Image 1 (cartoon, helix red, strand yellow):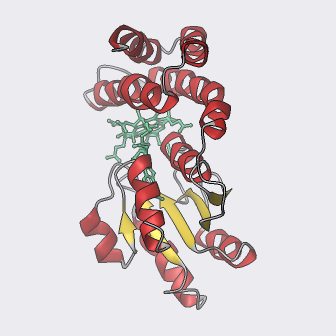
Image 2 (image 1 turned 30 degrees about the vertical axis):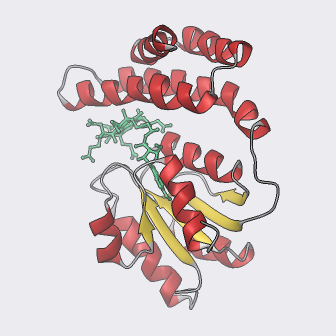
Length: 216
Ligand code: B1M
C-alpha cells in the first residue's frame, strides 16, 4: 500500500542520505503509516542490502557507517510515535540488555529495546561493548527478570555464552532468564549456550519475553 514510500526509505539508507531518511520518517508521522511497517519494510531492508553489498566487497566501511547513521536518525524520529502507540500500561517485566563486549552494533539491539519498552517492559539498556561483569552487576541492580544479549559478529557471539556463564557464576541463574539475538545467533546456538531463548527480530523478542514472563 505504501510501497513507494518504503522503496524511498530503502534507498535513503542505501545512499546514506540522512536528510532524506529524516524527511521520510517525518512523512510517516504526518501520514499515519504504522512506524513499525516503515522500520520493517523500509529502513531495515535498506540496511540489510548495504550489509549484503559490504559482504560482497561492493561497498566499504564508510558506506556502511553512513547507512547506519541515516537509519539511526530515522529511528530517533519514529521512536516517540512508537512509544505513544504503546498498548501495555502495566509492567510485564524488567529487562537489562546490551551488545556483547567487542561488538559495537547497536541498531538491532535498540530496536528490540524500543519494542520491549513499548510492550510494557522496563528496559535498562547498557549500550554496546558491554563486559559480562556489567551484565551481572546491572541484572542485580535492576532485579532483572530477563537479560537480553545481542551480538552481530561471528567473532563476538561467544560473548553471549560468557554472559550466561557469568550470570550462573553469580548465582543469578536460572531465575534470571537470558535471551539472545543478532545475525549469527540461532535457536540452536541459544540451546547450546544454555540461554532461555532466541529471537530473529524485535517483534519475536517481545513475544519470547512475554512467554518467559508467563504473559504470552
Ligand atoms: Co557491521 N558487520 N561491522 N557495522 N554491519 C555486519 C554485522 C556484517 C554481517 C556485514 C557483512 O559483512 N555482510 C559483518 C559481520 C560478518 C560476520 O561476523 N560474519 C560486519 C562487519 C564485518 C563489521 C566490521 C568488523 C567491519 C570492519 O571494521 N571491517 C565492524 C565491526 C565493529 C565492531 O563491532 N567491533 C563493523 C562495523 C559496523 C558499523 C559501525 C559501520 C555499523 C554499525 C553501526 C551501529 O550499530 N551504530 C555496521 C552495520 C550497520 C552493519 C550491517 C550492515 C547492519 C546491521 C544492522 O544494524 N542491521 C550488518 C549487515 C547485516 O546485518 N545485514 C553488518 C539492522 C538491524 C535492525 O538488524 O542488527 O540484525 P540486526 O537486528 C535484528 C535482529 O538481528 C534481531 O532483532 C533486530 C531487529 O529485527 N536482534 C535481536 C538483534 N539483537 C537482538 C537481541 C535479541 C533478540 C533479537 O534479544 C536480546
